[in-house]
Image: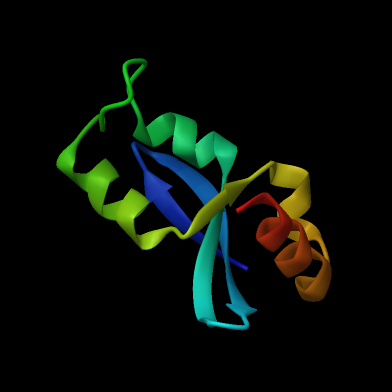
Length: 77
């Protein structure tokens, strides 16, 4: 697990290996911070961070075993 800092707050992110390659997964809390209420980005920095994240999950799911997290995400996409 690693972190990304945005607007003076730190958010956990995690690199996960999927059958199609490694991707970064973030939390829905981070996604909420990046987006405006009307679905736009709050800044150019927010857009760059969002484009580097493959998928957003609830914060407690970020701590799942990698295999379990992969299956959960694949079942949702």
